[in-house]
Amino acid sequence: QVQLVESGGGLVQPGGSLRLSCAASGFTFASAAMRWYRQAPGKERELVASISTTGYSTSYADSVKGRFTISRDNAKNTAYLQMNSLKLDDTAVYYCYARWMAGYWGQGTQVAVSS
Image (cartoon, rainbow, N blue to C red; front, side, top):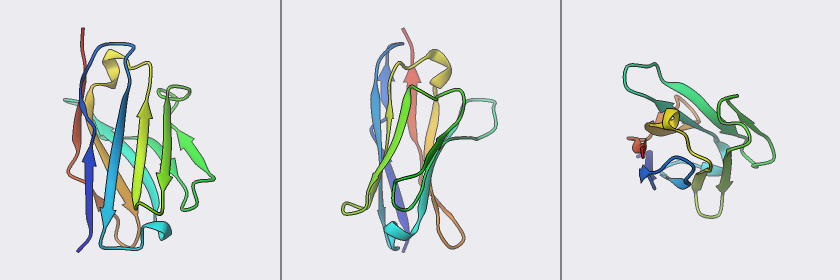
């Protein structure tokens, strides 16, 4: 059974940082490219960052480039999203996605940026 469990969300002030984690199980994590998406209230889900199976290749949405860093630890079956210099517009539910077979989603973790 494939499972993706996100954690690390919460309430943070503008300019603050959070680190999201996505713990994977039930499949060969090292064979799956991973992505982080987010969905703000009333908006469509958008791709935030992607990372290749080895971690050597990453890409980012323009809105987060230079502030967010995606990484992975294949030994721990976990993907991460380090978010720095958070802005009000970063408020959303963040989802991890495993690009493997049919594709799998986590349940999401809420990030709220507010003063």
